[in-house]
Length: 204
Image (cartoon, rainbow, N blue to C red; front, side, top):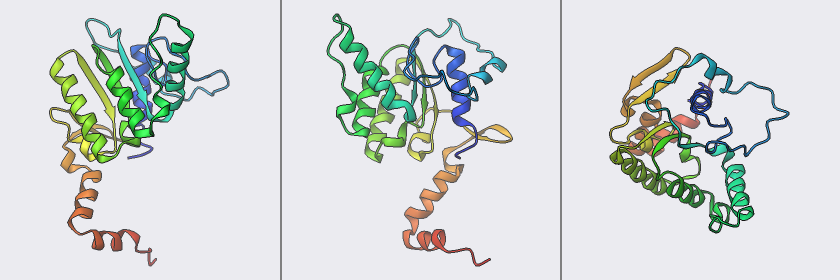
């Protein structure tokens, strides 16, 4: 659920792997932090220890909330480098199409990929496209994905290990046991009854 610390946890893992907490690849600084108060998950990384051999040196930290800044940074960097191909121009597409084009271009290499709510701009059909990419990454045997999501579709990714995060910690779970799945199941079973119950004002 929102506010449980999912993004903070991903920021800490990202910082431990060498990414900027705003997102991007190694060495990217797409967002100015000079006036920010350090309450991000990067500080939490000091309490973590990464166990990987060899150490992660490639991948991407994707954050939906900073996608615009990162995409603009990538386009600008491509324009300033005469030896690079033309910029991908992610921002000329719709929000969801830009996300998918970004994943297609950036998530093909070996590495660790940290995805923070990638479904935020994706329709259900586009989420299926992302699931296909995730499956290809898994089958390649060269990529690991750590993702925070509210989407029951993405939670149901075959082969994924799913954890529920709460104030009590991390607990293994199945997507069919999550509140998100149960809510969507109840809506699909009887939309009218679901909406009547959901919109009923509290008599108290």
